[in-house]
Amino acid sequence: MEDLKAKITESVEFINQKSKIKPKIAIILGTGLGRLAENIEEKEIIPYSEIPNFPISTVQSHSGNLVLGKLGNKEVVDFIIMKVIT
Image (cartoon, rainbow, N blue to C red; front, side):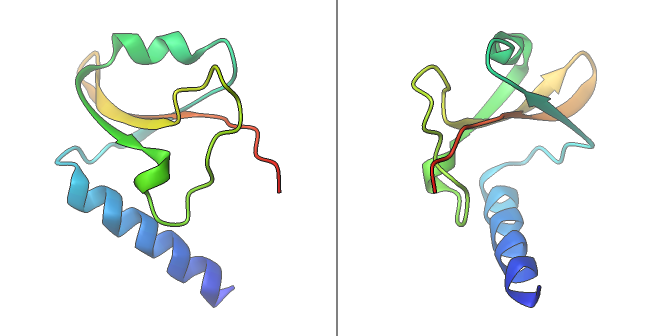
């Protein structure tokens, strides 16, 4: 369990270093709902492939990006649920 906590901490620290946005809301989107990310303003985009310990999307239609920004007046982070083959 400590190993998982360390991996999560590493991922969070990386994202915090890359983005000035500190979202309080996470939006989890499945296939077909990714267009909501188009409405996010002041976007900061971080490819999943750059984030330590993050799985890489195996679905061609998924962007493979973590999108941070504002939706309305709220800071949000947008995750596209990804199919991962392990």
